Length: 465
Ligand code: 4AD
Ligand code: MG
Image (cartoon, rainbow, N blue to C red; front, side, top):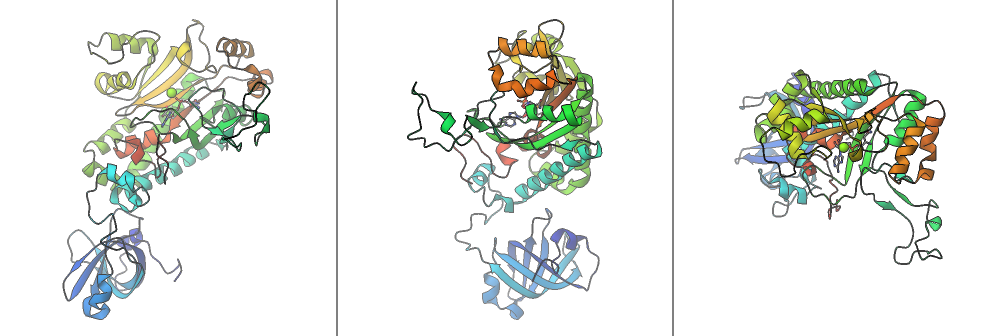
């Protein structure tokens, strides 16, 4: 027993120490064979590949081996052997077999291969046992790790911004209320409104839509910080690109202008893609073969080519002279929809595009205002197949301009006193952006639905497991 004695399947498959005894543990993918010999294909999640276990039927008994069915969990100790079988180099000749947990073939839902992704969403508690979700979740881990490494190597500090927030100022999306009040009978004020002074935090609180405002506090003290945490948006948007709970990476840098911000975003994305191509090759090859023939080529193409940088004005010109009929009309002042974004990236340029200089009326209050009085130093990074993958900006560091904008937008200024203090005391030019982790996951896995790149998706009417 114990982990010391166990070899991961990934390691076992790479081993050349034939003749030695090893122990592997995992879940049975298939068992086949005849009266003399049984072949068990075993996976423990460490790799997309299975290891073959060869068991002598008379030695273990037919009755016992019958219980080793698809989905069962076993421990195997035996001799590592060079395999004669096609498609594998090693196998284990079982000396000892222990059954940890059977899986009734009449009930286990993952009997066969080839379940639809829709079906697998209904059994999200078991889908990590499939090849597809094994690959997706290993890639997810590798990316998360690479993100931390990228920033750590650049001297950024990982800042843990709060999940529960008292500020609703960002306006990035509808929020989820956090309360311990009795919702069937909440305390009331004289005016018969719910009295949040009685609530747990003595005020209204919500789940955060972004860590940015707090990250700015960090940047204006520690220079370069980033957050990497869950964010929550209660929009009722049932699309393949929206989750109610998603993870966001938000770097925030003092002394960066919008150009520096774009450079960092591009360098960051390319770094992650290059590492992934290197580290998750087998999983990417599997996904390419199964779901998206162009996947690896597309990742390479983005990793190796400069992103296009244009202004919002230029984007509007391109779109309105494209001759293409869009569902949402294109005109100056309108926000770009994903059909517009994808046209620019996929049809017009054939490369990722960074758009800057959006109209200030469609962007958040904190973005640095340009001298034209109409646009702000926003930047969106658009990716093939995805559309917007990053949103960011240079921030308005001028207290007066910021206060004026807050007033124009009727944002309660008292709620932001702490944020405004950074502009009062030692303000500095600074910039940052937010990368939607699952949007990036969509891009690198070739999955078409964001519900399939997070282990336990939260979407409208869906939070069971
Ligand atoms: O563009 P957004 O709303 O920007 C912000 O929240 C800023 N505070 C970021 C910053 O400057 N620090 O969101 C950033 C990114 C989007 O580009 C998108 O990739 C992703 O987050 N995103 C979502 N991903 C999944 N589901 C949703 N509902 C998402 N909403 C945004
Ligand atoms: Mg955005």
